[in-house]
Length: 112
Image (cartoon, helix red, strand yellow):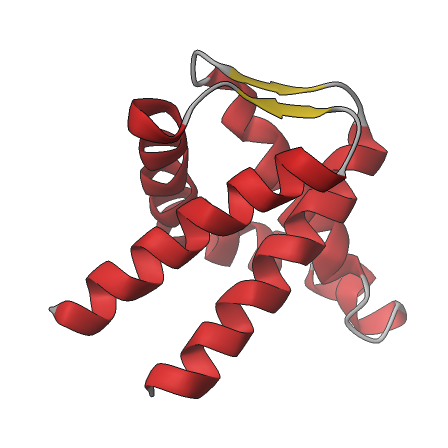
């Protein structure tokens, strides 16, 4: 349970870090906006991401897996439904999803 909490707050912090460094991503505050956005991101990654990977399998095979970045960016872009989260276009969503993915990967490396 402690690992889950650490990973969850690391993703929330990564989202705030992405909003700090990437122009075009705005997250108004840590509590509750970043927490709600991180929870929605986790929910979308559990439910929607596997479905999208199956539906786009031929494109993913043709691009040797690089289309997964597009899927991650689309899921990250869906976070604009949370009040207080603004993502202006696709490029900031792509860069933000890369930052969140790298930080989550580093936290998984440390705590698993």
